[in-house]
Amino acid sequence: MQEKCKRESLWTLFITFMKIGAMTFGGGYAMLPLLQKEVVNNHKWCSEADILDYFAVGQCTPGIIAVNTSTFIGYKTRGNLGGIVATLGFIFPSFLIISLLVPILEAFETNRYVAMALAGIRVCVCALITVSVLTMSKKSIIDVPTFILMALVLLVMIFFSPSPIILVIVSTIYGIVVSMLKVKKEVKK
Image 1 (cartoon, rainbow, N blue to C red):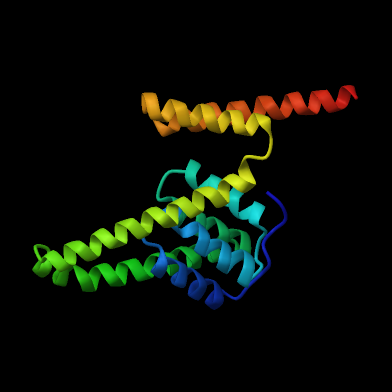
Image 2 (image 1 turned 90 degrees about the horizontal axis):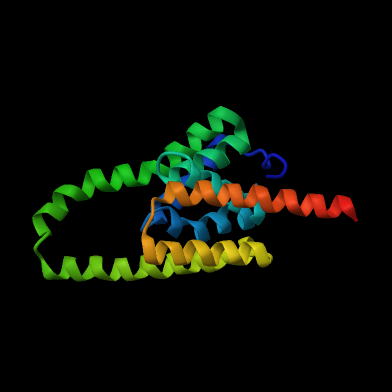
């Protein structure tokens, strides 16, 4: 991870993450395009590489990926208070929507139009996740060792369905070993 994010007002931080939270349907993976647009392109708080690092940290820590990533970016932008404000901004729309919609959805849960609308949202979420995967792969699969790791993890997930924790730990060890070998090779030159 690189230098600290650009400093921003707490209000701007809250509003930005509130917008991201309001549009994040389908969980953390679906938020990556919005996160890149707002945090990298619009506000220039961090670089694309930084966002991917923060997203990776968010995946490796307990809790919801989207909330963890928001908290981390807020922390990098404004310290502890920034982390709290970004988190509150991110979860506020969900809290509000759930509080208002649950009674309405319960009344219409058997309505076929509501069911069709939710089916449409699920398809949209799949497309958003696919875009996130493609975006992340362009920045993450940068050489032969990272391609090999991606292919191995994909095959293991398809055929064996192990715990994601085991995959993250093994991938971390793989990354450390590959980095150490690269450094050792450079030193010899």
